[in-house]
Length: 545
Ligand code: GLN
Image (cartoon, rainbow, N blue to C red; front, side, top):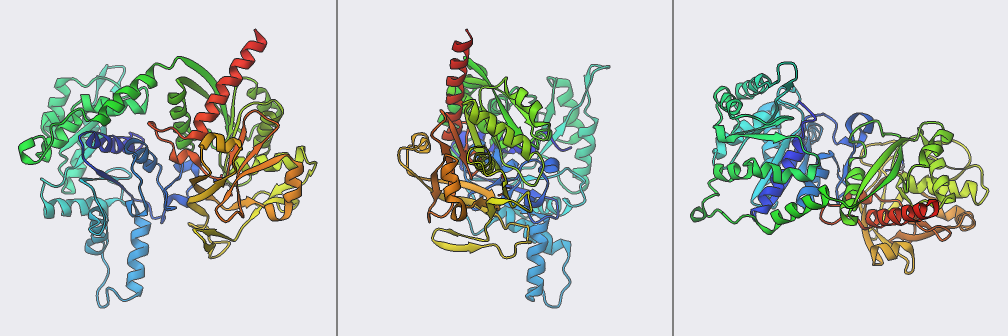
């Protein structure tokens, strides 16, 4: 079933193989027929993770990049929609003249090409996650392609790992193996025999249960591996290592034998890093509380990279961070009282009309009370609107995204430059992949807060937005509002970072820095924000003592 942590399991395998000195390539195949998840609602599907090259990908890519520190790209993310789009375009060009297009072999061949990707660097291992669950109709061609590949390449080159769930029945105090047995049967009926079964469970898995799963599922007992609930996801690489996952994977590929070209080197320096991370995860000496004010707070995973970036900043600052996820759609007065409990405020990205007033109220509160503030994407746009309305007195300042009238200090842009080349949206009403997406360079002014944080004048961050600060028309209003544009796009035309001089820590970025934060290298903006939060908390504490 979904939500078991296939993405984290895949990312962990990547990290463990790296710890043995191997290079990895991470890929995912999603069964849905959308071309990419860019048009899916965060309420339903969680976050859309943006890659350097602008690919809007599944949130599992966030886990891959965070755990392995590699950079993924569009060539690593497949959806059934992408396959059909490609195959149908080929058909129109006459690539299949005379023959009818079939799932086998035309669709399955595309899948096999994607997995093997013969024209690019695959590293020592390709780890390919199949999205959805066994038995999903849309995902059948993926399973079939893997069956064919296994036959063609041989078991010594392909390992199938199946992630299952062992429910714990409280009344009888036992773990149940039947769902695992059933899903393995479904897989076997499609021609796939799993080599390893990774069993998610909230309780220890006894030897007896492993024996049972082994017998019923036709998998060696040492390859039935426990994947127990973890207090924090960054403890998982060590847990899975202790459970024997990497040992069994290397054994499968006969790479546990040095004479065979394999490696016994262990722990590699990287594994040591995971062990020391465990210390910062489990033993922070300080604690603090911040608020994230957004409209998707009720959906788990809608802000997953943000959540992770905050915890990375916690590791770096030796602090446990409690986050109040506040719904920006509640009454702004109620929201303001909720904000009295926190030492820092983040307003994250978002789309459409909902929850705008709440976010603006939170920004106003942060600005007026000198509470450390970090705005991200929509958070920057609203920081601009808030200052225009409440500092410069332009009461109808707004964005074209959520209003039909008023002064559009945030407006629609239909063209911009990237690396000196003019890019533009094909059609304003074409919603798929038409935002400003992926890496864009930003020039930072010396002597700004941004410069103090980044320590450089040139940075590159990932973007995902359609609207921009309307600097052309409202320069004077912005100056009156006290807004400093301390970061601008490489061509100098688009504001990228906003800050205030009359505040101890108020910064907002048009980009999404959370996509680039890693557990071993927290993003500087988040680290600096948390550092400011701790200072603010100490001041508050001293004043109230
Ligand atoms: N909705 C805004 C835009 O499209 C902001 C997007 C975001 O926060 N990612 O410009």
